[in-house]
Image 1 (cartoon, rainbow, N blue to C red):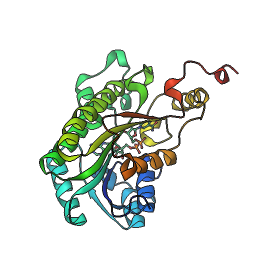
Image 2 (spheres, rainbow, N blue to C red):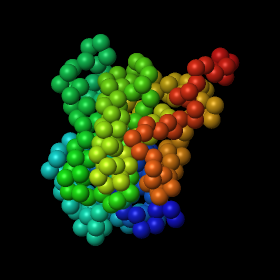
Image 3 (cartoon, rainbow, N blue to C red):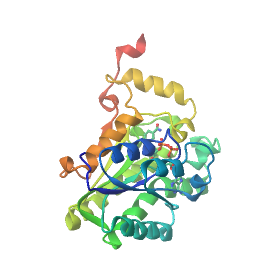
Length: 266
Ligand SMILES: NC(=O)c1ccc[n+]([C@@H]2O[C@H](COP(=O)([O-])OP(=O)(O)OC[C@H]3O[C@@H](n4cnc5c(N)ncnc54)[C@H](O)[C@@H]3O)[C@@H](O)[C@H]2O)c1
């Protein structure tokens, strides 16, 4: 139980395919006390696998918060600290959405108002979250803040569209805020760059199955699953990674360091 007595907020469990869903389950298994959160619309989703069901299963609270709204984030942090009876040990930002991809706008014909909204949801929300935690001094000493990202931030994947720039911004916020949080609170801030994964956000991308197969073929270990990602997140929330900060950590079966894999040519 490597998260025993640790208290954390997990953003982004939409359904049982969500990476955040698996992370929440794994954190609970490792003894953590949790607060789950997602945009208010996620709370209105029907079916057997919505955030309310997960909260029931894990015997924790789920609090709606739009991650682009500072007032929502501030309320969420206050309520969580009340539930936990003190500061927060770890936070997962598992949020991403591209309006242009949703509207099938190609990269060479983007709507820039949509782009700003996509950046706000997928990246600026991370800064807003960290700034809110910072101002409230809500993080426990030696705590851990984590966001999920994709290698589209460093390399060109045409179908990933404006999310490439959103992820580059997200990763940069982790480095810069990582300095401030490290210096004042001994809190670490990192991003995990995950393999393509079959989730609602993933499948919004054109030709996603082919993309997933290609990535699997290129990676000597194959694509990392959402469950494996959850285990890595738990490691990053545990005391065994206290000096890892301001890093973008690839969790991708080796994909990021491959040039060509003969497997692909078969
Ligand atoms: N699926 C992949 O292939 C893949 C690969 C690498 C990284 N990631 C990243 O992992 C993270 C989680 O995505 P996922 O694949 O589990 O998909 P997902 O669709 O299950 O999760 C995305 C979440 O973002 C939430 N969200 C959207 N707008 C929001 C807002 N305004 N406020 C609060 N929450 C909001 C959604 O409700 C949803 O729960 C994202 O950052 C994504 O970019 C995904």
